[in-house]
Image (cartoon, rainbow, N blue to C red; front, side, top):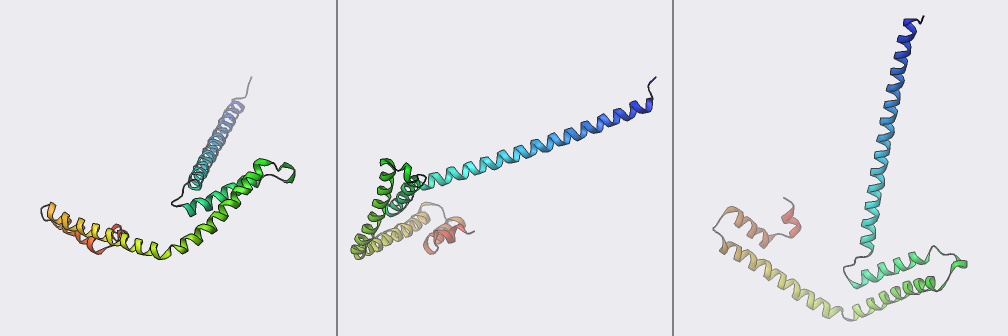
Length: 164
């Protein structure tokens, strides 16, 4: 005949082992979820970086990024693996850097004209901003909000306006 105490102890032991197993599984699953989330965040960051590497506001930025990208493509190869593709990347990076040097020189030559045109553009933007404020006041029935926005257009920078 079996001792009832042994059966009760065995049941408790089995129950406690089951609890331990359940907690371990839950902990393991939580760690796996955290690891997947970390990998996903890293993948998203890498994708953002890859996209940023392929976008430029102007030609000098595009040339700087192009030189970097070409150099990066040429780096993994050692001397034994050099071939026409790697040479192409190295030459392309060099061409980008040379184009940047030339760009800088040509831009300096045109500096005075650029300054005049940028000043004119700033004048036009100011005129647009002030005319927008004037028309805003005319287009709507007078209100505190209309006046506030019109006054902001007349006196604030965009950054100052957004710091409310």
